[in-house]
Image 1: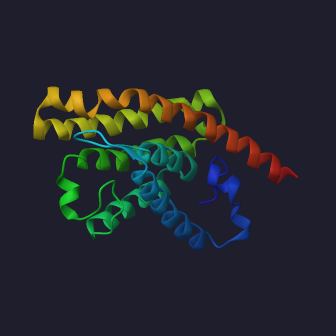
Image 2: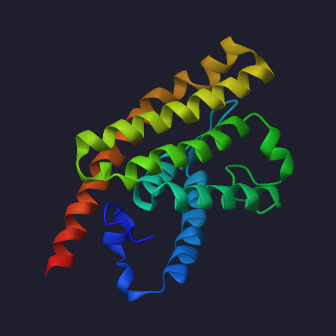
Length: 192
């Protein structure tokens, strides 16, 4: 994977490391980053507000679709094995609880957003906004949809969507600024 449109290949150029070692390191670093972001939270019911979606969107735009999907799949596997990677722990039952729709939404969103990352959409703020918004929509549609099957649509929208809209706009804006800024910073450093 030496796609010149991917931010991660500008940050960590392929020529310095074996591709296999690089990809393994990136996948484990990605799962670590998502785990840390899950612990940064503001308590809400029934779903806590975390920085997970921010981390997932950044990873997807930086890694591309293949590596980001592998990263998210490993993250879910780690959680299913009981490793406390999720906001409130781990375990198989977590993957069928109230937040599971969001978790599976993050997996699908990572592939979709990563596809745009592969195409170089992260190089400027305007093109970066398209996949970031789409990724958030995917996460919330699946998350609220599953939550609605447990507590009803009205409660799911009230508890699992509306309180998170302002913070999601903030996370999208932050990612849309950060990703192109990293592109510019590392591209300049690689030219020197």
